[in-house]
Structures are given as structure tokens and as C-alpha cells.
Image 1 (cartoon, rainbow, N blue to C red):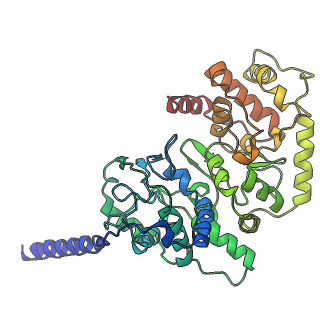
Image 2: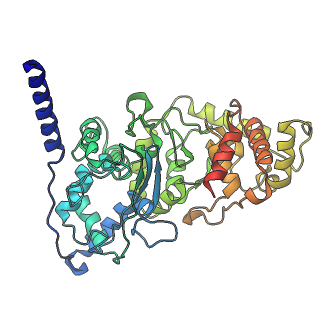
Length: 431
């Protein structure tokens, strides 16, 4: 009995110690918001560029809402998290936050009051940002128009709604500290690594996540992931792009959202490109240099030639020379394609060949389903490349047949599974 009581006491003390350690963060005193004149104009301008690279407005602006006022719903496997107001409103935003409080949030994932932030706010990436860049971001955000916008309560399943448990997540997955340049690579690569791994947090979407919502490492890094109903394609050697990416093509895509050998940005990538469209050419080139270092560099010319040759071979003319049987799913899909798609996607039109599209050649049908149903509102720098939505004119079965035909005709990849299920889920989410 004495042994049992001793064990229970030890366990209790350990639990108390763990809780005390996890609850160690104190509140940082509130400040009176400094006037805009307190910040140097050059620092504010620098912060504007960094905020664009960090996609801050993408997550912290709800559809139809004021910039940076929060309220955007972020869907996770654990429930919904709603972004917060990061305008300088004192009561509902970050107006009372000092630079020290702001820095702690980015570096450690702890807010001004001492509470844990959820890693949907990617502080495991932002911790790599330098003090100087954090000060510039702070200057930019604190000079935005303040907006009164109350926090929307998160909708998380138990026990993920218990914030203090994030102490364990941080212990496992948060590696604090600003980015340290790799001496084995040049200045441009290191600049790209700093932006991609830090503010750009590209891995947050393009790297598979483990069961705890943290990015997987090793060979899975930049291997692609499905989030919020869209599939962010692999950026490593598993990239589904039939034509290998070049620095010029990737820079085009980052700045304009369009490249003739790869197509147009859509879905969750569109607002990212809208932000990146304002960054410098040097930073865009640095990002491209770093991302390309993960990709397959073998037989580039041969792979490019083979992909373009296949695209020419399967180009859809004004009408197919040998139509498929209308009694099959592919035949019905071909007829639908000829009726609603061929006018823009036939041979000779000013669109990227579908056979070169990562959407068509990717591992998942969801992106194509979303694009056909919702259309494409192109990034700001490619406004003339829109696509209408067809949800109102295509039944679920028509869409399924069309998706299967596009995959079969314009790709040499195997048929997609679960097309019907993906359509049902996508359409249910739109209501």
C-alpha cells in the first residue's frame, strides 16, 4: 500500500510539474498603439512585401471582409479554426500588442495573453524569420486601418480544443530559431530557402501531414497534400507536371499565376499568387531556385519533348475523328467535352494544353472537379484567363463522365478512383 501511494504521489508531482511547465507563459503588458508616424516609411514598405510573401491576408481576411480583420474559416482534420483580427484595433485586434508580444507569437506560437496559438497559424515556419523582418511586418500591420472584428469561436473536437495540450505539439515539432544559411549553397538558394521555409510556409500546404497535423519530413517533404478540398501538388521529384518546371516557368507562375506549359493557378493557390504578384523579381527567382532544387533534374529535354509530343497527339480538334461509343462513360464524357469544353480547349486555342496540366495529371480528381464546377477567377496579373462555372449545367453523372474522359484522353496516368464520391463531397461543401 505504501508503495502504491508513493507511486501515485510521484505521478501526481510529475503531472503538476508538466502542467506548470506547459503553463509557464505570462501575459505581456498591453501598450497604447503607436501612431503611424512612429514607423519609418521604408520599414513599412518592406513589411508590405514580406506580408505578401507570407500570405497573411489570405488567411486573415474572410470572403467579403475587411483586410486582415480575420474570421476566415480554416478547415482541419480536427475541426474548424477561425483566423483572428490582426489589424491594430485595441480591443479586437493587435493594437495593444508590443513588438515583443508580436515576436513571441511568430517565434513561439504564444499570444499576448500567454495562451497557445494553434499551428494552423504556421509559427513553426515563422520562427525562422529574422528580427529585422518581424519588425518590418509589425510596422506594416500596425499602420493598417483598425477594424473592430470580434473573434469567432473555433469549432474543434475534444481534446483538440484544449490549448495547453499544444505544449506537447510544440515540444515535438517546433524548432525555434531564425533561419541559418547553408554554406554549401549560394546566396540565391539561401534567400529562397529563407522565404520558402519561413514566411512563405509553402510546406504547410505542399507537404503531407502526420496524424497530429505536423509536416512529415524526409522523402515526404513537399510531396503534396490535400487540404480544404483541394490537392496541393508535389513540389519535389514527384511533381505531376508533365513538362519539367524551369526557373522562368516557375517565376511566371509565382508572379502571374500562369505559364504556357503549365496552365493557370486556381483554387487556394489564386490568392497566394495575388500576394506574390507584388514581390520583387529577385525574390521570385530565389524562391524558384530553392523549389527547383527538390525536383527531378534528369533528362529534362527528353521529358519536355515527350510531354509536348503527347499533347500534340491528343489535342482535341473541332470534332473527334473517331468518337467513342455514347453507351460508355468515356463516350458520354467525350460528347460533353465537345459540347462545353472544346471551344476553349481544342487544338490551336490560347490555353495551355490539358495534357500538360498538373491538374489533369495529378493523383487526385478533386482539383479538376472544383475547377469545372466553380470555374476559374484568375489571379490579378492574368485577368484575361478566366473560366466559367459549369455546375449549373452539369449533373453529377455528367461531371463524372467528363472528368473520367479528360483523365483518360489527356493523360497517360491510370484512371482516378472515387470520382463520384469526390463530386458528392465537393458539391455538399458548396451549400
